[in-house]
Length: 215
Image (cartoon, rainbow, N blue to C red; front, side, top):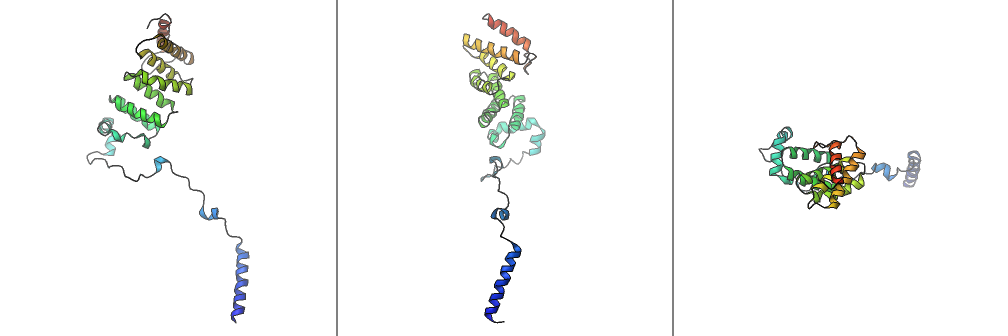
């Protein structure tokens, strides 16, 4: 077959092959679906976390809350909320509080509140710890903000009332704040009982005393 006839035959074959195969696939079909970017928590850090000391076993920390508390007390930098979710934060806070590590619990809640400012459960937990540490004035703005986001939450109102009562010096404005907060608790949850043991009946008595200018 001469060269010219061979080229002509090849051209006919290529044309037929394209006609059978159809148009080329779209680029998206070839590459597949769009890749979803990982969250910050799923990214592999450029610098690896320091390994646990040789004498510390992860299973021991998981099985023994006291061992976990000793570890985080000695290594507070390990309490990094960037690698946690809110549920884990609250669980660790309970462990720390049961071990009387209140300052560590407060620091963890402070960092968690900054990361998740709209989580009312974190706001309540942080404010409760602040009041227990004698820092009601630090708790009040946290609770006022939480009240605006969750006006029907009786726990937020109760803690705000406690913070107002505990704030010094005593003033009529703070007494009015506490009275309004406790009245709201009674209205929202007539059978309210706080984990610290205070009931709605107790709050009614406090409201009655505040109404006549007594604490």
